[in-house]
Length: 253
Image (cartoon, rainbow, N blue to C red):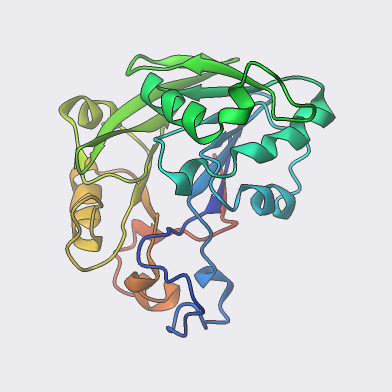
């Protein structure tokens, strides 16, 4: 199995105008953080979790020539805004894109991308094959996904476990079922927004505490605000078994 970090950043705390903070002006490639997403390659399948605003560039950067499915964690725009760009894969693969999401997320997609789901299908619009997920495990072909329910303040969000890897983004609270499903993970990937308190995201210290509680062989922090600081500086504050992820990082497991 290969996991690629397509993006490790977030819209949280990022200004819409040109920013001159030390992260935004850094020349270190590890500090270039697009919106959070990962790609899983396993059992002949290529699957992306979340298609944020940077989805098209992420696919081009990684030279992705085939995509089997998109799985959504939740409906916030920094995780869904790039859905329109699956149309390129529709054209190349000559089939609808499989999309896995809860009913709540599907309702949001139908509002935000009304033209995709309209009765009259305008030529060239994205073609989707919707699959409803719950907290029950499911498969995409031979690849098994186990949902990890978490809370983003009060909003239900799905993390996912694939084999020995647990992936969690936009979490403040891990539900009891979620904690049960994380147990035994060899790799934990979890959000660590910033050092300051935040109402809906794990902070740096909270993410470290969770990593210690889970006891995974290696934990990677993602969904990182530029407020957390530069990759090189933050890495010095982490124990050996916890790493700061970065865009383009690949794990071959």
